[in-house]
View 1 (cartoon, rainbow, N blue to C red):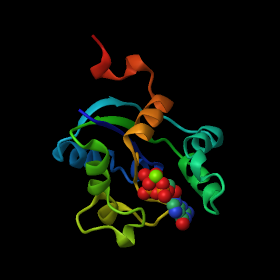
View 2: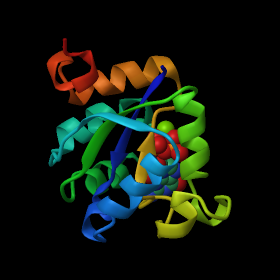
View 3: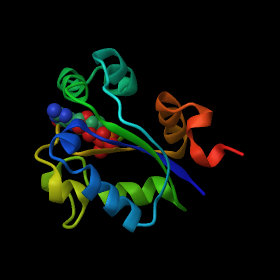
View 4: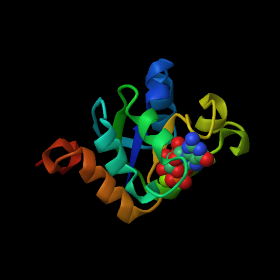
Length: 141
Ligand code: GTP
Ligand code: MG
């Protein structure tokens, strides 16, 4: 099945929402095939979001993503990339559909609880950013 990479962002961890958000992800049919807790540095956060390097919010994004621990996970499901973005809702929680994770829990466009890969290809690149082959449980013999 298809895979996507999510990060439960530092605001999710600070608000004690790891359990609730993970429950919703599993309830929606996603299988967790890798997960860990990490504290990003400015460098590793900036590397992860390198495509946004020239955007005006890049500094804020890096500062926020390195402000506390976060929980990356690799998720598996048919149509995982698109279905996960539907589950989390729009980047700006004020524009996110009712019942989505961002609509229910996010405070702002900058602090929006979760990341979701935007393509299958980027999902693979982003998964490799956090997990070695042997850390993805379903890859093991
Ligand atoms: P991700 O799943 O985190 O990649 O979000 P996205 O794909 O919905 O949005 P995008 O990739 O365009 O932006 C990446 C992240 O940058 C967003 O999740 C926000 O946290 C942050 N971001 C985007 N736009 C703004 C903005 O205008 N201000 C601030 N502070 N952050 C922003
Ligand atoms: Mg994105």
